[in-house]
Image 1 (cartoon, one colour):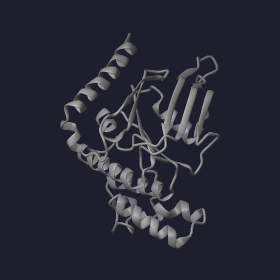
Image 2 (cartoon, rainbow, N blue to C red; image 1 turned 180 degrees about the horizontal axis):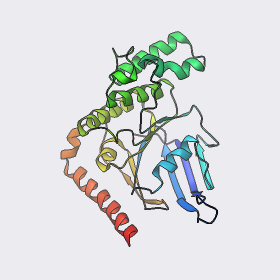
Image 3 (cartoon, rainbow, N blue to C red; image 1 turned 90 degrees about the horizontal axis):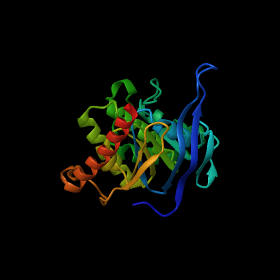
Image 4 (cartoon, one colour; image 1 turned 30 degrees about the vertical axis):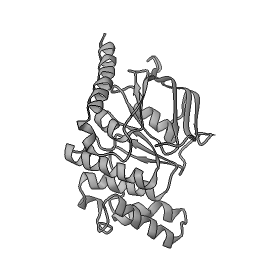
Amino acid sequence: MSSDAVLIAAKGLSKRYPGRREADPPTLALESFDITVSAQEVACVVGPSGCGKTTLLNMIAGFETPTSGSLTVKGQAVIGPHPDRSVVFQQPALFPWLTVWDNVTLGPRLRGHDPRALEASARKVLLSVGLSGFERHFPYQLSGGMRQRVQLARVLVASPDVILMDEPFGALDAQTRVVMHEVVLRVWSEYRPTIFFITHDVEEALILADYIYVMTRRPGRIKERIEVPFSRPRSYELIGDPKFAALRARIVGILRDEWLEAQE
């Protein structure tokens, strides 16, 4: 499980967007948001559509600036993107004219990493995500799940402190999603990264996470922090566990209540 060292800390975090026109009221996406994520922890955030999940991830990534509150990674204020935080996006953000190998190694090569050490690291990572043998393929030659594995490999080879994942498997079919969950579980076992994962899939969160943060409707706040009681290593046999079903029903119930209150 996670270590005791706090890696991500948000306190009183709020994000307000101005209206599209001067006369339009602003939109409060997040309000008084508190969260802490420890090193080596897998934290999943679930919540109703439009509750600010992706806004939160973008602020941790440094793509957006909080309106108020504090946000730190490793005790340092987040003031913009940084190599210590890498993102696996919803859609594979790959260079179509580069091979798998070149997509994965581009960042470290540009930063001047030792070529021999980089080659060894890249080969290990590609093996871990199941892409060994596909080094010379181009993105158009890969399935959607394989392209997401390239994204994950590219992030891992950079050795960030935090991996941010924004619903990366939402566009995949059910069978491929299961495979990708197993890839993430294997990668965590091998590399022990800190992962901050946004998802709308409660089952996905229960399979992957150490802690699940359930958000309210907009403006997003933490409704409940749930510790996932299943030990690692994990497998899909978990879904047959009565505790798994009960916890899934509990979280779905919380989300349903939030959705119903939003309709009133």
